[in-house]
Image (cartoon, rainbow, N blue to C red; front, side, top):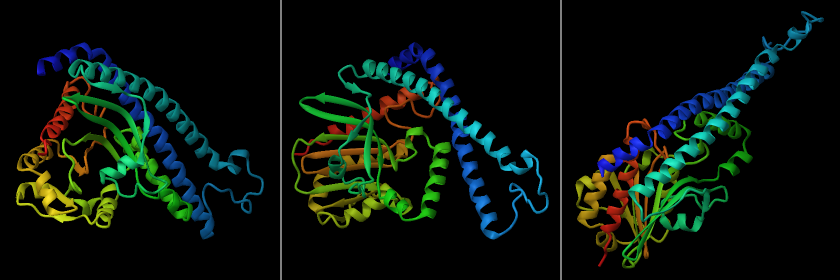
Length: 357
């Protein structure tokens, strides 16, 4: 397969090189757009502080000292606002233009990669919403009951083998009740704006600005239905303030799920298991399954989540750079193609381990 990846890399070199240039341009225009907006809001706040404190601002003309100012003396604030609006406008247009070019090249490359490496796969890169019921059934995302929550798929890949089907999605998920909180607090609204500006500058992808989770979300049907549910989450929930923190609270109050301790010390260094009962947890989490999950965690160093609910299996991996994308590595190095291939193979391997008898 490494030879096939190298051959693909050579065939797509021109496309990937062009995409790499556009990605760098996107970074520049993102900084202009969101950085300019951030400076604007900071300026508004500073100006309000001066006004409400009764102090004179260097940007507000004092008519008592100079009752007949020139146009520029009377409108000093425009000297800052107009250039900022120009920067924000240029950043917005540049971001939109180069983002469109980049995503077109990226999607063309992804189609070619999937078609070559996995000829039997069904690929769709059309954006679509994902039903809340399916996301809730996975038990991964607490807070999805909120009307302000939603799940969005940027692409889908389906594999069928021996009558079994596994569906992969490149997901972005927003959880919680941010909108309700913001409607009740002007301070909260300002904080939310600042948060979005910072994420606009530093987020791995532009699409991630309003989401709590971005990554791979896969689901498949189990060969045999289990009684109850089992959820495996990263064992560092205390550091999470979004989907995992809310999820752990939900798990404690739904279907009687409880923390289950297993004998695999290395597995429990990385994961916490919540299940409807201990027997079901031990039935599902075989030594082979726990070993594979531990190896995946070591290899990718990502948040890996699995759940088993009735006859359904769910698998999610946090990937801020996106799943059906070319990642954050240099597009001309070949690592992006190898990472994408390894992600599919890893998830397919997990599914093969789930022959519950």
